[in-house]
Length: 131
Image (cartoon, rainbow, N blue to C red; front, top):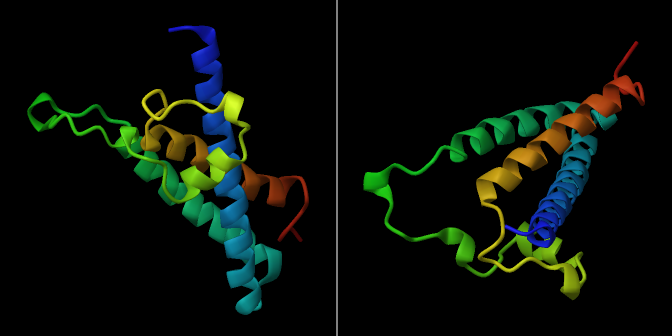
């Protein structure tokens, strides 16, 4: 495996994680403001959603059992949802082909770390919710 392909996979995963974190931040801020909780609610929502993503991403990283492998690799499909949005943020020359893209579980796991990191940064760096 060459280093360019690994670099493009890392860039694709990084952009996906940043887009996922940004979308979750905006959505959780809107929900939190609607309920009158401000950024404290945003921090809590990001923590709980990030923790759920972490569990789901870790669970989906498990290898497929040989008897369950139906050779239907979903990574080869056309990008949908946030993957399409993240792909638009990358210039055409730096896009990774769909067959070389990391699994959705791997990208979700990395995105969960970004979401949890954002929640932690809101508390420890920016002092949101500290007395």
